[in-house]
Length: 258
Image (cartoon, rainbow, N blue to C red):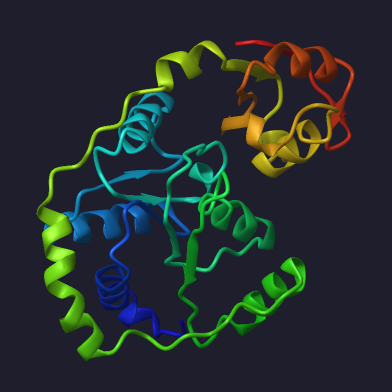
């Protein structure tokens, strides 16, 4: 949907009313934007929380576990959260800001429509972002259909249904995270931002290991001189063994269990 920068929040409001998602991730480009959008949604009494790289790892995990259990329906996030969100029932992804890296578009939209279910990704594009949109379309190999913003009439017709869902108590799902945490191994690497390492470098390298794919990679935290990568689904020992002799972006890093 094409939209002027200043009209984005009002479009978000209209889209959430007409789509009325069961579970939705709203992706923003910066943590300041995440703070701002989450605050605006909370003022409108949306069941909502946020996650970004400026938060402590424990806080991010706590928010993710609450989202996984269905304690709130709208998660506002930066790209740091797109990797490692392994939740089967996210019905909608909204790209509030277009990602600047085309790979991020795939990571973000891949959070919906999992495990054989359908999902919908809606992207807000400002008039000056054609170049980024064209790059993304070239990368994914097809054009993203353009749709008009919801009309006033549509919004008004759907409002009652939306408000009813907003007021409904969430159905809390059984927490699989305790069982999952046993299957997570956190790896320590002795390189970070100062060696120009990014999350995408770790994902690209680890996902090439036989028997491992991007779904097995959890939260990645990159600090100045060290990085931490969570490996899910009991694949930790395998990744640890292979990464002792595998370079990341041309550098052989020391790796151990954190």
